[in-house]
Structure formats: structure tokens, C-alpha cells
Length: 561
Image (cartoon, rainbow, N blue to C red; front, side):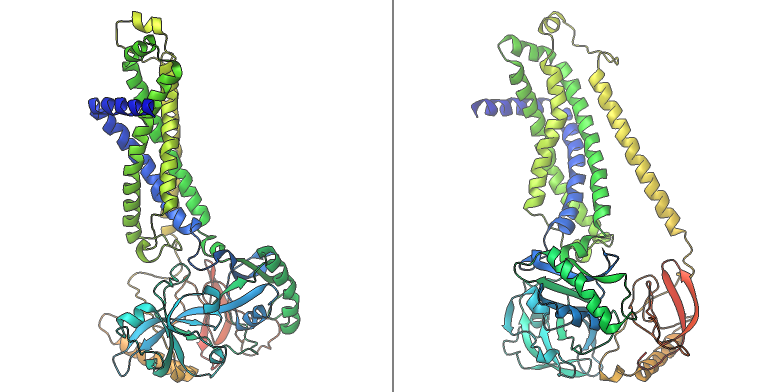
């Protein structure tokens, strides 16, 4: 430790005497390490952090599979009831979807985010309660009445933390909902969905035969059951589901399986993040080559100093240790500055655009700095210091003492033969830079090409408004159609509006997979909305393909369709 302390003090004096060199080296390392920390902080938040619920390793999603390949987590009421029956491997299965409800009375209404969930939802995710209870199985049956569980924010901000809120009613979409519980502040579902302000029971019929896919699920494995066992059991149960509902519900190539909840959330984002991590690794290697060249040039100017130290008895390892100490100090300084710059820079970028990455929250609010990021920074700084400091240390420590002492000149040659190491580092820098530039150019060209693709419809000057039509009034299609007509009439009268229309789903932005009937055709086989856009009602047989979405024009709205 005494020797190490001397090495650190000597390195500090050298850095103070060579401020320009120190600033240049630290700046290069801050850039190289900082971009790696920025990307790793996103990788950590998206891929590495477990979902914020108790026993996250036992949380799964039951998904549809085709020829054994897991598909999406879309669930139908009939499938959900079938999965609930697989009690050999699943402790509980919950259904959930996001919707909007109108809060308030009269004309002072506000649309709030609501989670429509089955009674098992809170058994699966196990959130803490401030007061009250969860939904009971009886409250989750059809026509069981109106009950609601409040989020902590809703309770504190809208109801002023009313301690006597249990048993009181709040008006949602014209109906009186009785408050039965308040969830604690710690329950954070931003990882898996937009955070609801309230939760209401799903009230699915246990004897349903509905094959419409309009919600997702989350399940918890039974204690001692592995994911592989659950997958085998669910796959085996597919035949029983097919026997009950026939090929109209699921053909012979389809089945069920399970994947971890975390895998379901991040599977699509993993390839892009790993590619980004590899790209910024190249940036760090370029920075290492830059600093290594700086150290080689500096070592050339210190040849006589190192020769004198050797003459006084310093061994080769002692010289290498001094030089590696200097490089590690530079690297740790760059790592500390890179940690701050990378984290702050990434938070600033995410406030502009999160690139649709999951688990980052609104404007990157879930991006944090935890022990993984700090440990990554320390490990990366040490590895970087060794990488760029080892070659200069090796070159400087094996200098010929006699040749150095006889040479009164401080010049250093610049030819390839005299500076093979420096020339090799320059070649590495240029090669890595070309790889990054070519990759960036290809990405830019692809982005420009995608932006010029004609989607088949005009997007200029098109505005979208979302609304929620819920409650007993809208249980019949006639009321929905009447509201649609009145709304469109008023919107079309607004100055500047050329045309207005209503639809269930915005093109290419997702939708519902619901069965439908074709007028004049029997219900042989299965007719299910596919792709990204699905319209309900009576359908014309003429369809056209637009990208990955099938657009079919509806010519009439059919009640119950």
C-alpha cells in the first residue's frame, strides 16, 4: 500500500504538470465510457432489472403458440377460463386490460385511466394495501354490482386522503361504484402497463364461449413448479380446449405455452439494445486506441526518466506498475465523469423520445442508477485502464538502457518501423471508425427509405381523438351508433374540418382480434380479425392488404356483432 500510495502521488504530479495531456485523455475516456454507461443504463432498466413484484421469477404470461413457437399474450374469455383450470401448475391466472371511465357527475366529467381486472389480479401481483380489501370472487361475476379499488394517487389527490372512504361511492360513467380498497403507493405497474388510477372487476362469465381476444393475462406458477413443467402442461391441455370448442377456436397447429413476464415485456427490445451496446463498445475501443497513442507519445518523451529509474534499481514490473497506475487513474476519472454525463445525457434523450422501448415509463421516468450501473462503471473503467495502458507500459518498460543513456536527443522517430505499435493502433482506430460510419450510414438510409414508403393513405393534417363509450347506455350498438352520428355531425361543423370519421382502431397501431359473422355465410370454420386493424359488424368480402394490416370496409353496424 505504501508503494501504491507513492505511485498515485507521482502520477498526480505528472498530471498536474501536463494539464493539456490530462484533459485530452480524460475527455476521450469520458466520451467513450459515457456512451457505454448511457446505453447500459437503458439495458439495465429494460433487460436486467426484475419486474417490481414479489417473487418475480414465478410470474408468467400464458401465450398462444403456433407449432411450438410462442406468440402474443392476447387472451379470450374462453381461453382464460381454460387456463384458470390448470391448477396443477398455475397458482392463479388474472385477466387485465386498460380502459377509460368518466369520473364525476353532470357535465363536469373527466376521463381517467382504469384497469379492468379479474379478482385474481391482486393475488398474482400481491400489492400492499393502505386499507380495505381486494375484489371477492362473487364481485367478479357478471351483474354482481359496481365496486372499485383506488390507487394511492387517486385517493390522495382527488379524495384528499379521506380516511373514511371505504364503503363510499364514486360516480364512474354514470354508475355508483362502492370503494372497497386503496392500494399502497409502492404498487407500481408502469413496467407492464400505463398506471391506472382505479381498478374495477372484469366480471367475465365462467361459462363463456367468447373467442374474442381483447385483453392480456398474468399468472403465477405454483410453488415448486418450473417454467418447463408449466409449458408442458399447457401444451398438453391444448387438445382438451380444441375438443371443447372445435377447430373454429384453435386449429391443430396452435396451442398454449408460458413465458416469464419479464421475457414477454422485453423480447422485442432485446436485439436492438444488444446491437446498440455493441456499437458503443466500438466507440470505447476507439477512445482506448486514442489514449494509448497519447500514452505512447508521452512515454517516448519520458524515456530518459524511465532509464534513470531503471539505473537506480527499478525492475521492469515496477516500471509497468507505475505506468498502469497512471492509466487507471485516467480511466477512473473518465469513468466518474462518464457516469454523470452518460446518465444525464440519456435521461435528456428519453424525455424527447423513448423509441417505444418498454419498462422506461413516461419520458424515461423509470430509468435509474442502481448498483448494476455503478458496478458496470467501475468494472468498465478498470478494464479500459488496463486495455489502453498495458501496451504503452510494455513498450516503455523494455527500452534499451544503454541506447537511451547514450542518446542525448529527445527526438522520437515517426516511421512505421520505429513506431509499429502506434501505427497498429492508428489502423485499429480507422478500421473501427469506418465500421461505425458505414453502419450509421446504412441505418440513416434505411430510416429515410422507410419514411418515404407510401402507406396507402394520407396522414397530413389528420388528427386523432380517443374517447370512451362505457356504461349501460352503450351496451347496445344503437346507442353507440347514435353517439357516433351526433359527434361526427358536430365535428364536421367545426371551421377548417374537411372530413371526419369514426373507427375502433387507428391504422397500424394495434386493435382487437374479435370473431365476426359474414352476412349470407354459415359459421363454418373461423372468421377472426387479423393483422393490426379489426372492424366489427357486417363485412364485405372485398379486402385489400396495407403493409401488415388487413383493411376490410364495414357497410353496416350489427348489434352484438
